[in-house]
Amino acid sequence: MPKVESKYSLPPHPLLNDYYRDETERKKMVKQLFDSTASHYDWINKVMSFGTGERYRYEALERAGLGVGQSVLDIGCGTGVLARHEMELVGPDGTVLGVDPSFGMLQQAQGRGVEWVTMGRGECLPLQDQQFDFISMGYALRHVVDLGEAFTEYYRVLKPGGTVLLLEISPPASRIGYQLIKFYMKYLIPLITRLGVRDKNAQLLMSYYWDTIEQCVPPQMILEALEAAGFEKVKRNVQFGVFSEYTASRPA
Image (cartoon, rainbow, N blue to C red; front, side, top):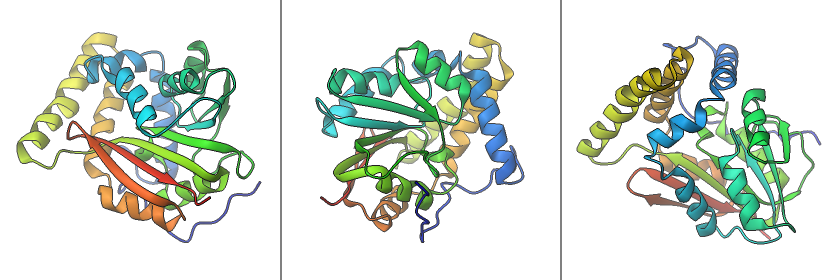
């Protein structure tokens, strides 16, 4: 099914000239980084979240109302951490499909037990209309080309009455909190990554990770982009001052 063109355009962040010069270079660089670091990615995430990341993801899915028997699309599924929790929650009567542009990440997801995966990007999903009860995206919103295009696609493949859950990291509002998390994520995590896995690409990915967080559009603009795509009941829940849970529904 051809994608529906969005009338609302909003890149998640400006071009980051320290890493690439244009959108073509960005796509190539991001795919190469994720492909080459896929085998280290789970270790890095555990260090970055002090080992609490998996529990938090599971609880976020519960808060969003994911339940038994639902059909789920996990966009930007990466190594399949979120998808595995979704499989637990929907049970044998539900289905979970993971989508990611990185072949390396999809291999890791399959190794984790995520049975159904396919290559694709959030802005142009290779899927039919109104297929899923629930759509998730965990910490990948900053890597799409355009939020308007992506959210229009999410709306297209979501069933009426379905729910979308977007997990993201947002800089704290307080100056002290902002400086602390910046030091941790921009400097300490890349250093730990380099020492722990001895992979320059992994270190580069973590530096890039923070820069996309710091330059990302503010939460209110993300909420407005969801509304512009047609979603209702759009809201943002903040956990621990830094984890944003965006939820929205397609009208029934």
